[in-house]
Length: 354
Image (cartoon, rainbow, N blue to C red; front, side, top):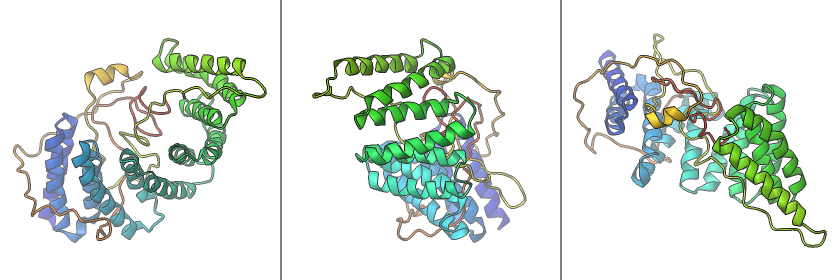
């Protein structure tokens, strides 16, 4: 119905405007109303999953109560996408990625591993050496390490490094991060000599990219010194205990921003595009980024006052009962542009691989 679609568009645009201005509660309220509108019209299944995805992503950042709301929202979005595109459709990738972040945030490591395994299988459809495959491998390796499976993590990191060295430009920041992560995995497995070799390769590129005084560069130098000291103290019969690992800049897999697998932008029938929401950067965060791109004009406010729907109007199904529809884009648009990691979407300098 045209009126329902118009209402959905107004609510979604109001949410985007609110989020752009940092008003997360207002953005969440508008998204809830957008979900109400989309659920009332079977022709808006694609739009429904987009609103579910964005509200799930926003809710995940709002503490334990938000996490509890995010899981059924994201599972509903996943079920919808599976109905529309099948269990291996590329459009499932952003939702699986967001779910993996949520599960890791909740310390549900087995479920995070399952989601990332599916994500890797979807990435491989693009080609065994596609950059998205390397990204999925790195995320999965991180979870394997959390699970204590360092042997599997090492194999995954080596595969990711092989792909990135082949398909990315020399000294790409993602390749540097993979070298560092593989180094730490080698330390965990007792191979300190190779760990040092990997860090020696990574440090010059890291310094060239970030500058000699950057916090990450200083941490890498400190780590090199620790491992060199460890090697010097080690004896043939009593190897030294492993030094604490290099500090990882990571909270969840690829937090904040586009998913590692970029599916085609979600479009309304007729061609107008819906894009994932992204909050406006805070001034302090903007100052940390190495590059600030030109700002893009924000969408004007569509509604001056939007009431919050009641609990009876918002029904969030469980993951078992949810069977909604469509895929969601893997790309977010920043309405106030900020330089971000092309793999995980975090602001420059805050990405776990930056």
